[in-house]
Amino acid sequence: MMMKTIMQFLAFIIFSSAVCADEVYDVLLDSMTDKNFVTVERLKQDELQAFCSQPRSVSADEARAAELRAAALSDVPIPSDQNYLGDWQRGEKVASNGRGLQYSDDPEQENGGNCYACHQLDPAEVAYGNLGPSLSGYGARGQSIAMLQYTWTKLWNTHAYNICSHMPRFGAAGILTEQQLRDVMAFLFDPQSPVNRTQP
Amino acid sequence: MNKGFVRGIFTVLIGLWSVTLLSDTEGVFDQYREMLGDDNPAIFVIFDGEEIWYAPAGPKSVSLEQCDLGLGPGVVEGAYAQLPRYFPDVDRVQDVEARLEYCMTQLQGLTPAEVHEKPYSLRGDLGTELEALVAWIADQSSGLVIAPGQAHAKERATYALGENLFYYRAGPHDFSCATCHEQTGRRIRLQALPNLTTHPGAAEAYSSWPAYRISQGIVRTMGWRMRDCMRQQRMPELIMGSQASVALQTYLAVNGAGASMAAPGLKR
Amino acid sequence: MASRMRIRAQLKEDYCEVKALMRHPMETGMRKDQSGAAIPANFIEDVQVLHNDAVVVQAYWGAAVSANPFLGVRFKGGAQGDVVKVVWRDNRGDSGSGETTIR
Image (cartoon, rainbow over all chains, first blue to last red; front, side):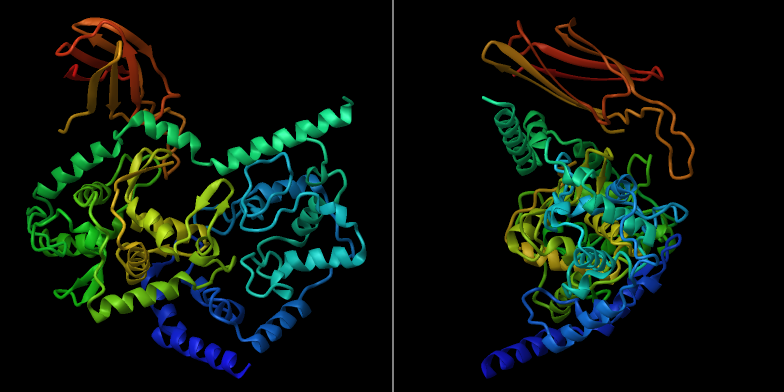
């Protein structure tokens, strides 16, 4: 137990002494330039990003991880009318749309969730990524309040449950609107949604 | 044989077909490559690049013939495979693009602003001079071992910086290079993602850029690839030849060191 | 100006295989550039493969063929040393060609 702590401490020191986060930020400021509506402001890290900017092999500070998880969880808002489910057809569009917030995008257009970049959803759709687990048949989990809140929280800020996950904070970072998130929820939960189709 | 059974078999076949399709994401391009043989439309761009190197240009009306890419003035063969490296005349580590900028400003009298105005093609363009130069210079290292400089302290520091940049999460989506490129066997939609933290993945990536991009009909450089990754990560624009660009390329080149260059490559 | 075609002709079993890589933007006319202006159509319409001056392949192309097109054809009756030529003409009236001998 002591040995493990010493090794973690050494790994932390060795890793962080080479280059510190401030230097990386300064280099980036020097190496990038504003483009259209995207500015170098985006290079500034918040606490979560700074904490999560390490290779998988480096052991994380468990206490700090717990703090950040708790903070993420406490900030998740419940939908204003307790209604978690929107329209799955609109949700499907949000899941297929990979645009939004790039300097090549039109800032007047709504952002997409780009869910298919990382997840399987509709089993009939073959063009899906595998950075995240398959979500086909998600509706089989049922619509208990616990399941709805869990899923809503994952979409809003996945770090509430899975600290340093690579999934974006669709709600907390303002990528998708509340309505879009409800629509994505419906795409996942609605028995009529293609995500839950059992026949090809 | 009832309907349910037939349906079940059908589902299994669709599943198997999908798996084959997905595990063979490059299959269509492999066939194209086989037909093409060693013909790569990049050959035309390489010819252009060679012409541009030897053509007098800029206010001083001088060619790039005396440009030192690391192996001495005018020595192009083998130079790309040893970049990025430390250059004493500027006291920093440079990649091929930073070095070309230096030569264009020093030898030809161009201003940095002129060099940075439009290094990469935009939609509808048929290729830029920089893209052609990099295509030719990289071709002059084809088949040679990737061996970026790591003897100098600044070269090693650049690698460490590159590694930190690789894991730096920022922007509204919290993306870092690692988000997509730190695991093996992953893909985004149907585009395979090499694991750049390992030797095989880094070698595959670093050896095949610059590349002729079939979908764009032009040659794209590694510097452009980094810029375009950053755009998709929701970051602002990466400056050509900047410290971050050089450091990230150094990280890739060192991880891929020992493999052979095979550029310009051929990509979708 | 450097050559706009790379052409090779090789005798194989009982046919001759011709491979020609042509440099041409094959612009469909449907694309817009960064400023939003339409890029004018510019594509190869006509391709001929000639063996000792006789047309052995006649192709009619259009906007659907991609940029820097690659053509691979096989024909019978060629012998080593014969001349093979590929000629193209585009919608603007421009033309290009390449010539080689069969190996």
